[in-house]
Image (tube, rainbow, N blue to C red; front, side, top):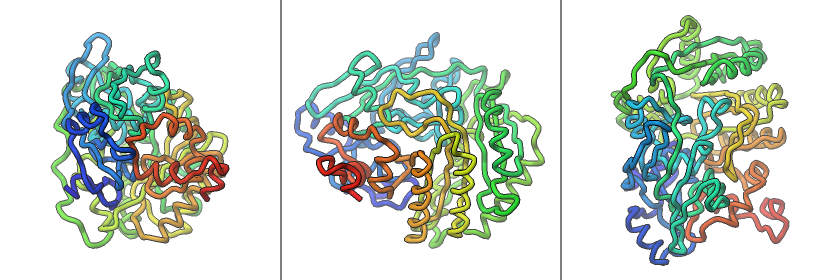
Length: 449
């Protein structure tokens, strides 16, 4: 049980107890759910404590896992909230459809993708996952089930998308899929010498391609600082319409007693990776697994970070500030002598999410993964927060386990509106740690700092 409900990215302790979805539904319909006692738990791929509820119980949603219908003309799919994205891909592929937005893993539930309003490599064209939600059913602790859409219960609709599971128990949802010529991707890798060259390339790459994302050699400083590879992709006109088996044959079978992804390893890996990709710049067709979900091919990959796990920091800064702020963020990591195994930089577009709280906004987003080295890593993350907020940016809440209430409030000014619509029977460790520590009666954030 403990490992089953362990947060995926971090070595955070599991919730003290879990209940199945049927029992939770009975409690809610009977009006027996206690205040701040429940939180939906999908497949545990969140990197922080937004899916943890130490003071209460998590609800295992994975038994609600049926795909109910797919309209082969419109691409509208209806499914239970516990269905995995991998199952949706497999079901829709023969009909020529694919999710309009996918995150970096296909092993997330439908409800989790909506609750976190996840984004992908094509935000510039499709926005967030929430942009493609038609409707959902939500069970709240008043015992009532609400149908929520842009026209039915619109306030609950907006609060639940990106609401991190705090507005009630999502039972099912309808989403619009995207018609694609095939599941395969024609990928092109373009090397860039530094961040200035990347920024010169990024907007044009977004305009010409469905997908675009950059890998950064985070450890390199000096004249090569910010060098990397820009990956662009489009669905192949002629390719496979059959989903391949989810996951891979590789795995990390045990927990090493130390961090395997240390600085010498990362230096060698980054050099080899860049050399290999830089010598294969011609467009090539690849399967969707490798393009969208590379880490899914190695089961339990997070064990490589050692027994203390990892912290991920994802920030977004306004486009006009990015050319100065992104180099500043990377420089801070090098000054702290901290190596990031996977450093990703991409451009968010201007498509607005229907969500009340949504992390993506116009600008550039930088993602960094750090082994947890205790106080030194926490100090670095605090510095990255400071740089981000000072630039008018935001820190991603569903990939966080330690941001302060002040950073959260600065990132999401509308959080009191979500608090007003939060179901009193639902709480998460993240919300208790951030919004829950702000006393609005005493002037908000200042009183919590």
